[in-house]
Length: 488
Image 1 (tube, rainbow, N blue to C red):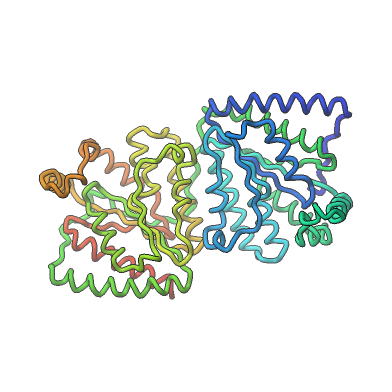
Image 2 (image 1 turned 45 degrees about the horizontal axis):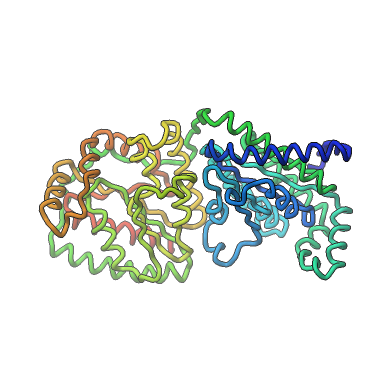
């Protein structure tokens, strides 16, 4: 950025003419992005007093207010600090066909922490990887991500801060951080330059805005937004390259290789259930005290016993410190966003436990087999899911994933029992029978899922569930062991 040469500002007449044309074009393009279902995320970063807020205010005047949201991202709250770093940004991504404008965001947060010495080299590098994965995942899933950095000189910033402070009505807009930034301008410039260099990419490049003149800054943003939208709509049908997995994997057996003859006596079951639930209850209080988040994810065949398994774990927990999330088909507002959005929204706070009855793995099973997403979408998802779980692991979460396994004959017996028992008929649907007809295709998909997403930080655990008692005790043992490991 130090060697950045600003584009020459046009003469007043040309500036007015281009501004008028850009406003009209954006007003027209907002209808087109709705038709193309293109979500647009605009990130405005830069120096304090560079005019970021006023630029957003003038840009949105050209957009129907039903189709945009603006978020001013100040320092994270105490509540936000109890979630992963990216959480507060991921939950604010736009729906398809709409805009979200962020007045500062992840760049300001990371660069600010770096300036204040809150991130060492290793932590900074980890944050950069998180940001790059986040931006790439959005663009791979059809988002247009536009990033602007408002650049002003040391002298210009000082002048603006003094002008704001001189008026009672605007003095509040000058923060301690703004003053510190101006006092340490050169140091901050180094950090900003490094950050922009580290996170610049072909799919989400940085645009440096010469912000000395407000109208000129507005024109630069408007024209870039318009050209970005046009290019994104032209490229909407292009397939995204598949990335190689970079995370270490734990080998898993194929479903056909799993012995399902494991069983347990009623006496042993009751004894172990009592012991393990008592131990899990004790561990839950320690988790809360040490602020360790836990995510327990269940996948498995219909009628495999996921619900009973979850119930035995939940019985041991303090109800104030856990939540069970039964995951069904996405709602329209969920379907209109990145498929992981609804799971980012359900993450636990530190010290709490989230139990998922079905998960983000629907992308590589149901959505894959029922044609709810493209082949490119589900093939990409293995890596995206590993990245998601890596983010959770680096946040400090304990991730425990269960596949609940039964054979086809056991499933048929349980389906028929449900159908013939009035109190259980609600558990069986036509969709369950339809899915059963695709058993072989689902088994192939599950084998691939286990092969590609059993990472060292989030491995799969197979629960042999022909004997439900055995599966419940095995799950409790694994949960207890994993939590004890995390609490050491």
